[in-house]
Amino acid sequence: MIFKNLKQLILGAVVIMTLFASCNREVTVGRVLFKESKNKIYKDVDEAQLSEAIGNVLKSDGDKLKSTKFLTAFYQENGNQAVLITKFYPDGKLTLLSERLANVSEHGLDPTHFNSNEYQELLTKINSKDGITTLEDAYQQIARLELATADAILNYSSALQFGVVNPNKVLERYYIETKQADEEFMKGVLSAGSIETLLDSIQPKSDHYLALQNALKSGAKPENLSAEDARKTIIVNMERARWKQDVDSNNMIYVNIPAFRLDVVKDGKVTGEMKVVVGTGRNNSGKATFTNAKKIKDTPHSHETPVLESMIHSVQVNPYWNIPKSIAGKEILKLVQADRYYLSNAGIDVLQNEKIVEDPENIDWASLSPDNLPYRFRQRPGDENSLGKIKFLFKNNSSVYLHDTPAQAAFNRDVRASSHGCVRVEQPLDLANALFKEDKFTTIKNDMESAEQKPARDVALSPKTQVVLDYKTVEVKDNKLKFYPDVYEQDIVLYSHM
Image 1 (tube, rainbow, N blue to C red):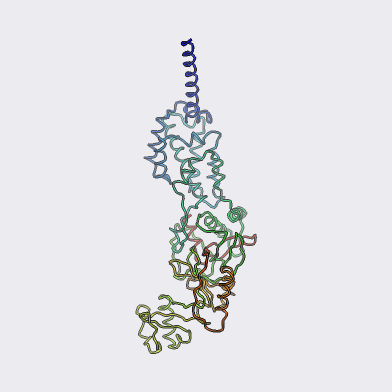
Image 2: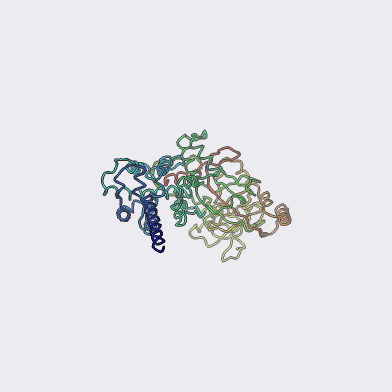
């Protein structure tokens, strides 16, 4: 009886071991490749030797991979096994990846950036029944396909989810932090169970992006641009749409610099908009002139409005204008040298060691220069004040803000890039109304409309509201695609880096 039970146990163990061995044979790389290609050479592929080959290719060709450091660590952790081929090669799923790489131009991207042709050639060779004839070549090509697949999946996923250009490294005055693919993201990509699901999930799905993608496909263009320049403009704006940034698109004050427009956004809807005047650009005609140059260096005009995000924390009603040193030396000094009464007529105080100079007309202005100017200038509140009746304050390293202006004629121009960098707002009272509750807004309104020259008053905003100064030369507005002038030539710079 004991012998019979023991015999049954041994028989059961043999069956289990046989099944286990059978399962192991099913999932080996060699059997997976043979099943799909019918190339008998794969039957003799040894897992240990293949792992060694993957390690060797990583050492010899690792510098050709775009994610070398991460992939080296990833395969070391996985014993240099061909984990992606085992997982994704069956049922021709890698062909799907190859097709996506070949058609990446649908996203305005260059297939050569993803080694599309090389990947297709390698996959075709592996797929062929007689493409590989020696075991030595089999190890080399399988190792190359495994690493090329990992690199392609990472590059493609990263490009569609984060873009191919980091604007913080390319644009001199771009201060919105733009996220990049990190180790956690890359691990998530390579651990995906279905390549089809992965490739579908990383397709950007916002209405704005899809509209740009359709415009690229249909060849949409405005009258003032050639078909080629319009195509490149759309491509650059698709890249911008892929950037991941910490911006609350549901609630914010949004300024699109090339559109010369401010939007008040609440609960995901634009509840108000107005014209703005932005900083002087390097290309006031606004027409993009793309070149074939590679990696053009960004050289901004000194008065360009920066791209940034911050939080509006307060306003100053009837503000002083503390005139920046650069403007004082280059502009104000010339005006006062030509007319010694210019300062008093413009309501500008002269300060030395933070004390007001009582009789600035007696200063020998002709003897001074921008490099030798021991004074600073401050314009008093009033109708002539360049900041108008109110300025909206938010922290930033460029000393810019939104503000009112007495120079209303500028809002009648089509191209409104003429300030020193700050953003002049056409309807500041409407903006204040959108930001503040009734009691505070009433105080602000009364001070702004008072016939008396009210002293400067700071009014805190609670809760704070995000403000975004952005740069998009194509956007969907009123269900239509609208093109705007590339006044800062950022399109040209970005395209050269793509």
